[in-house]
Image: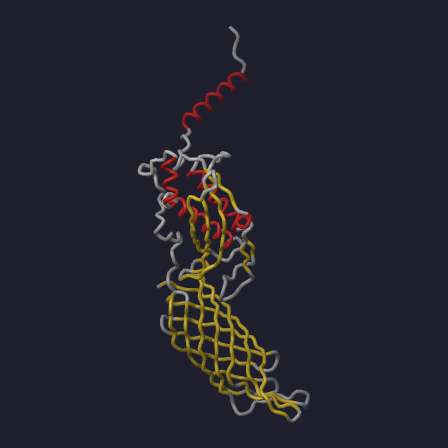
Length: 366
């Protein structure tokens, strides 16, 4: 009796393994609604884009600029939902059209969120409108990477599609059409996302900041009195500033320095009360003493009072992004001069000034 060749044995093993795998593979789940529906995107919806500019800004997250194809993301989300909900789309099938896609970014207590709104219309094979939906979804922007915003919009689209899936049979026209198509709505399985319950963001809010060290860098102006060619008038000198401090539940202390381009230098310490209006909004006010100097002068001590508001956004772990606005008033000495080639001089930097800051907060959960 001839021996079987090794190649024949290997082929038999492969065929047997494939048969066993086919028997073990679970059968595809039946659609929620055994009707033929073809999913389409309008030209407007398919081309929908969201453009994010360069941060930082109080009106947008400080992520790198990007353009998000929110229309394509919505098409992918409803394509996946359609495969769970319906049979294929024959030429005689009803048409589910994704008619419009809107997208925006929204600031909440736990940070920035991507928000989408989708308009969908179901029409019968004859073109009659059976139902219309406006679904919304939101997802948190996680981190400052270049993919954070596109990823959040994709998550928001998937949540909007889940809400549509849960509410599909609610319009009266859709319910009648399903019943006429032989779908027993009473026994039809329902998705697990209730349409009237807001979708909860999966990432929990970061712990509150109780004690924190922070560093801010900013720009603003210093008001100075200039005497030049016998004329005296006030000028705004552009300046850079640095703040390094520690915040506590109800107070703060900080080192402050501001410097113009080679003219006025201010260095000192400040402190005062701190009020946390929300997990992401700090209000502080205080005062301090500074040493002000200009070249060729010994300098003088001045007093300052100020108020500031900071928007503090979670980045990762205990790191927070700080965006701040500050107004202050300096009470300078009577005279602090610097001669400009014998033609003029700058006196004490005093009066009101405004500043904008961006920095990092290393929060310590209490």
